[in-house]
Length: 282
Ligand SMILES: Nc1ncnc2c1ncn2[C@@H]1O[C@H](COP(=O)(O)OP(=O)(O)OP(=O)(O)O)[C@@H](O)[C@H]1O
Image 1 (cartoon, rainbow, N blue to C red):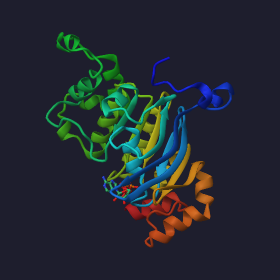
Image 2 (image 1 turned 180 degrees about the vertical axis):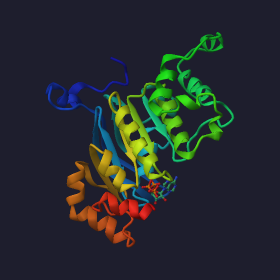
Image 3 (image 1 turned 60 degrees about the horizontal axis):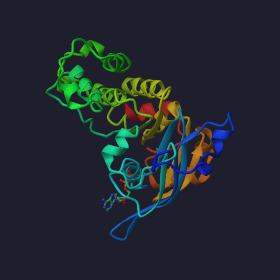
Image 4 (image 1 turned 90 degrees about the horizontal axis):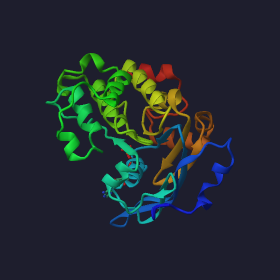
């Protein structure tokens, strides 16, 4: 057992073979920035193999929470257990090596390199230098798989900079997949996408969740309704509802109040039908 490993008292669910294992356990998380309390006493779990949405109005603390999980921000209080390993205190690169991948709102790809080269570089991140320098022939299996699942195989030789917005997001997800993460954090993956691109992204996320837990920060409520297994709602740095189903979130009057009360144009309403959302996007 490594020094990172926490004693088994936190792993009770694993003794029940029918209970999904909470691979991510967040407890008592708080952070303040120069006296402003951005997160207060945040608790929630994400289970192995689920697509877990993190929603909440602007400024609720969603990105701050993702920044803490990935080691970009250090919390003032609390704990982030990933597969029993405490992530708080680790540097970002160490957290990546533990199996946590993250995408950003603006896709971070190398525009001048081809799609395949981008995937190849991402897939190389665990390799020692001497293996990187060794000449290889053909496409590595993990790169081939990423090309396939993202639908980017026909564009393998095209510069990433020439891809459409949605395709760049899928490339970034593909790059993360080559690193075989066990937890993938996606920050507003469908922002700026067409309805078709959103559907394609949702299908990709569901595919990824076969081997990996996916935590999605998203404002698009139609996307959440279609693709979430569980949902946690943040409001003003606190958990309003943790680990709920989509139906529970939609039926919750307090969640409704937070969204509808703050967004008079109804853009963020969690109970609207898909048709309503698509009307709005048109
Ligand atoms: N480094 C920082 N210094 C000071 N305040 C910060 C910092 N990072 C975040 N905040 C504040 O913390 C609060 C939560 O911000 P955060 O970006 O996490 O919200 P969010 O839910 O992701 O919002 P959005 O949906 O608009 O992206 C905001 O009031 C923000 O201004």
